[in-house]
Image (cartoon, rainbow, N blue to C red; front, top):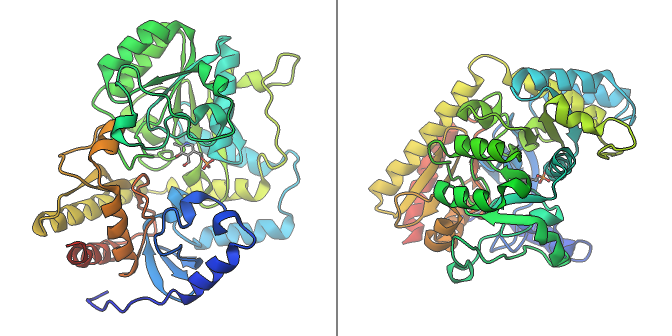
Length: 446
Ligand SMILES: Cc1ncc(COP(=O)(O)O)c(C=O)c1O
């Protein structure tokens, strides 16, 4: 990639973004893609192949965002292109029972240890929504516990303290100020939400003592992936498991980000924790919109048609093209050494970035391991939770850093709350290019 830093022309990106303002709110379909995140306006992407993407002006980048983690096989993987093309020629979707959904479900069960049965949804948000409904029906309780800084999709009751805020707004750890993330949600919805800090066993034990027996469920991301990449403290997930079991509450493991990423069976396999219900999305569909709820028959069979069933409809559930993609994707992931490679390539990127920051005397840490990590500009040695993130992470500096990387051929979102993703398409030379670009970007920071 070398030292050549010609200012990339973004004329067409700018023109199209201007044009988009007339038809789309903020010119995009999600605030995370527009001017709220990209200081100079978004880079409009037109094409992807393997680990590379090209913008509308023809500039090439190595993509480390990978559709927020959805593209576990990179862009336009030949097997998936073939699968989709062939399936499309037969008809995209029938909203009827198909062999494709059976084949997808069988492979899913083969990889995820807790999945006695699975139900496919269209997004991760739908999956968490369904998981909560199932938990409430199963336990006959309404309340549930969510953690500060965890994002579980945009369903009303989950939108409490999912965004970062100024430290002085957060209130005491033992009684966090409750901050809704959206207008348009009746505050009464949050009466059923118990809010707790994450990664703090003593605090969780206290909250569970008080509320545990009223809870339908505790929902958690196994690795906190919406404040960058924050790992659970040793034994923390296991303690959650014990506390929920003791109170008759269900443990919902939201593996929408981590599923199929850290291990074939996600973080539940990696950390050896047995959830009651788990939710998936993103990497499962390898770029196609999908979500999934998995768990034992005793819980999921509540959706079986009856007078007292848990309702879950959806025209696009089990979308045929997506089911074909899932089967092909999971076959690719089941091949030998895939996960070793994810971990090796990711760890090389992490080590390279750490070396750059150390050598360039930039106060930044790289947190996470293997296939997912995040850079924090901070004086701290580690970021352990939501409050650390809100207090100690310089998210503006991160955004500047990413904009410098964008000019050097690395594609990543400037939002510090997301994370770097390694796909099967990433190579050692991509890592080398990233490390070189990061080194150059450090010069631009000073
Ligand atoms: C942990 C987690 N759960 C659920 C969701 C919602 O998934 P989707 O965007 O597919 O609705 C997300 C999305 O980023 C997520 O990070």
